[in-house]
Length: 141
Image (tube, rainbow, N blue to C red):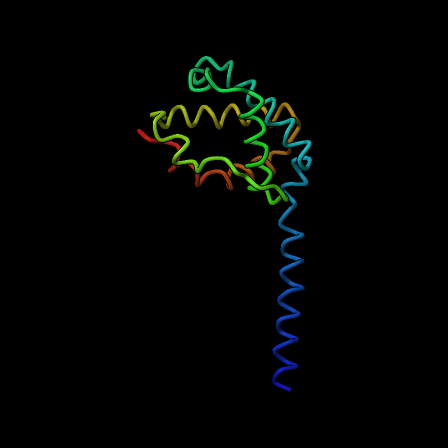
C-alpha cells in the first residue's frame, strides 16, 4: 500500500508539473512564439542601433547576430522551448560601463518596439518583470 501511495504521489506531481509547464508558456505564446519574438527582436535591435542616446553601445554589433541571440534569450525567459547559449549577462556587459540611464533607455526602446508590434500592455509588463533581475548584471557603473 505504501508503494502504491508513493507511486500515486509521484504520478500526481508529474501531472501537476506538466500542467504548470504548459501554463508557463503563456507569455511565450502571447509574444507570438518564436516567429513573433524574432520579429520583435529585429525591430528592437534596429531601434537600438539608431537610438541617439544609446546607439553607441551597439555600433560595432552585428544586428542579425544580436537579434538572433536576443530571440533565443527572450524565447527562453518567456517560457518557450529555446536554449540561450550566449554569454552570461554579467560577462557580456562587464566592460561596457552601462549606467542606469542607459539601461532605462534600453527598456524604453524595448517598450516602443513592443508597442509597435501590438503586444498587450500586460504582456509587456510580464516580460519586463522577467527581465528585471538582469539589471544588476548589466548596469556596471
